[in-house]
Amino acid sequence: MLLEGKTAVVTGCNRGIGKAILEDMAKHGADVFAVVRKENSEFTLFCQELEKKYEVNIQRVYADFSKEDDVRKAAKEILHEKKDIDILVNNIGIANPLNMFTMIRMESIRAAFDINFFSGLLFTQMLSKSMMKRKRGAIIFISSSAAFDGGANVEYSASKAAIIGESRRLALELGRFGIRVNAVAPGLTETDMGNSMSPEDEAIALSRNIMGRKGKPEEIADVVVFLSSEMSKFITGQVLRVDGGLIK
Image 1 (tube, rainbow, N blue to C red):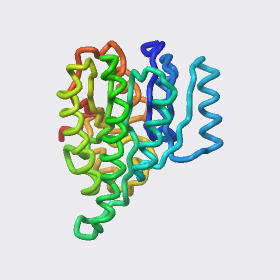
Image 2 (tube, one colour):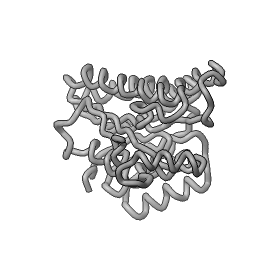
Image 3 (cartoon, one colour):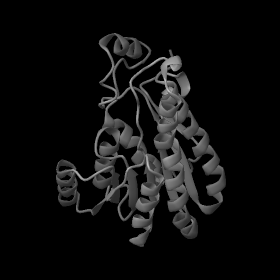
Image 4 (cartoon, rainbow, N blue to C red):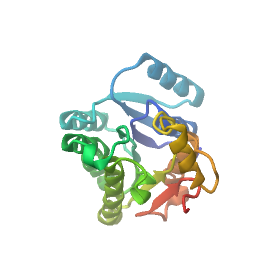
């Protein structure tokens, strides 16, 4: 129960890593604002089951993070509840099919940055102000190993690298208010995106991985919970790579 009595906000948590983070937060006692794109009966049932199993409250917030107005609306809806926000996890992101840089339209690159980078920056700007007043909080951005090795499209790799610069700058600015800001950079993971590679590309990717396998969403979630908890109270401005040892 590392997060008992805490309130968290998690974006993009209807599948994959985000869904695992939501479940892990609930398992460790946190109430959660679960921000997803649209209402879904399967996800609603999942949240209700978590609430019953772990005796927590999960409030669903619907927003399309490709639209700035929706981002602002979601933040205002959460702030309107007047709950102390202890944790913010910026997980939402998109990845397009792998294409050569010379084949990608600039509007696709801008669209990826809008969702992967700018939406999280705006969302954090709005929610962090309540943390600043209380002089405490933990903010976690989900980056990617592609930020280091360029292992995905240029728009994905670049936007995830921008998240690292963002998190380090915010750690500097928000540290004096008692707010810790870190990033997690997963490697190839068993998600819809991670499972969409061709067998040939997957074999190449895993050959560079010391552990020789994909990560599991819950393994990423465990790290996020750690960075959200008091167990990491002296860690800020860091990027924690959870990639099975991508050093080859």
